[in-house]
Image (cartoon, rainbow over all chains, first blue to last red; front, side, top):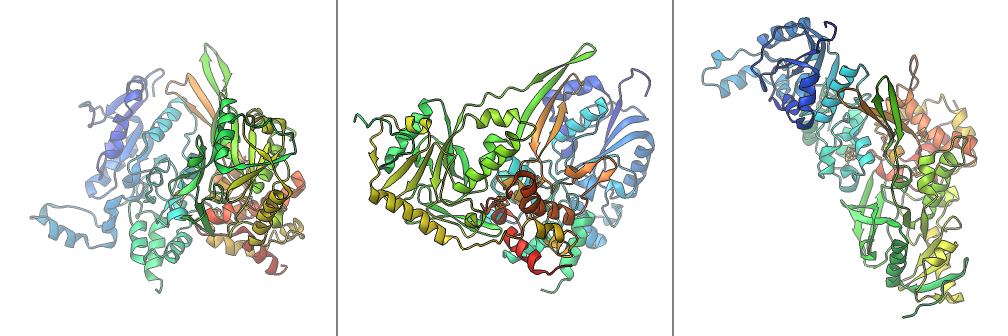
Length: 262
Length: 375
Ligand code: SF4
Ligand code: SF4
Ligand code: SF4
Ligand code: SF4
């Protein structure tokens, strides 16, 4: 980066719903400040500007599901100093990683009138499976507070505040009553990384695990406990295979659970 | 109704239950914000209280390891609920509190300590275990070598209305820890609930003043007998027993015991047990700055030895595994605390047992370690 020049920011999208990058637009109070501090080179959701790299920071949303995605991602990495992934798709393959345990050709035949137009990979894979990721922001969608914190930290040159502990910590700090203990609602919070502010439990819902596994996650123990409480194996698997089902921790726990004798 | 003059300190009086409202009104009129047990989200939390009708009247908490259910009962008791997931530390040592802000000023910085404009709190319905827990936190935050002005500021102004427990949950074990159920000291007022009236012991001048204008009677020998029976009955209800005579040595001797590997398979390192614990006092700080780096706020937040970054030191992490974190928790709580502060860090409230998602029971685990044999 040239002396005094603004950092160059680009926002890219692979297979995803756009919800994560929209969180940047949802930062209504801060957006003008951000635009002031950085040069937004590429952000099709917001501007027709299309400036070539190299970029100081690339935000990448979405998972890799096509050969074209993969080529683009490699090029983005080559062109970017810092690469930050946004959300469950980019970090764990997203909900589209459900295909990873199914027959994609069969899906394609069932859904598309002309399946021959569809060129897709058999697996939906996270960005980190292909290129080096500098920071990962979790969630489905990501929290705009965390996005802001990461951008701020990068601009100032300090480490971003990205918790690796459980969602339970956020429940307890905010005084949300535990839905698992008080009502027996199946909740993935004790194995899921914090950051959402325990959004689902604060609305009396169990955590769906969209922020992906916390560090040292112990899904085997939680799953056994859920089933001892009467949650069916199918339901437990459905939870594990959800938004972060493509993560190594949740996927291997699900595989173990499927193989375990009833 | 003219009301009686205020009772003297250490007297015990009796009044009909609805009269408690007047005590609360008196406290509010003196500037206190009342905090007490109230029903929210299917449980009992400690929230702002104005009317006695907001108390969990006629409810009880049915608790087991990993389970807590708020149930209706036939009684109309005001204070039949045992402790819920909240503890009073939420008000004395809040989960998040700003410590300072720093603003850039030319080449330098201006630091402004955060001000705490919280009103004085009146805690309504503090059980004996929690009174002991507050005393333990006083030891850490006020009487320790480094005083904590934030805690002290809130703590000094608290009015304490304590309650002798009339019920016990299956998770309670205050009798083993010598912390209850009978309230003995550290209160302004202490009540015992009878079917139709409250027997109230006056613990301080402030407690006496809170009864100004209220139509109380001196408690008769018969009333005192009935009140004593309430706590005695509660004491008999407490089933859970914990042996503490071999602590802390047992924990130190078995620091490398294979037992810790087996519990690590169950524990999720989710930190619930430490965050609901009324004595756990650990915190960390977070800095949040604005985009151009001109203003930053430093916030203190609850931390836990179950959180990986808690043990991050120069050169690496000293407790990377769940095993080492669980061992730290149990060994500190039940062992090292005794060396540090002269008594156990556990007051037997049972919160960690009820609110552990996978129902890990500290009393059972201590016994497992004890009976696992030396290694
Ligand atoms: S509701 Fe879920 S996330 Fe919250 S404390 Fe309970 S188990 Fe943890
Ligand atoms: S003992 Fe229970 S509450 Fe504590 S960290 Fe382990 S699983 Fe969580
Ligand atoms: S048990 Fe853990 S969280 Fe609690 S006071 Fe000790 S070190 Fe701190
Ligand atoms: S360790 Fe458990 S039982 Fe003991 S005081 Fe803490 S929460 Fe209560």
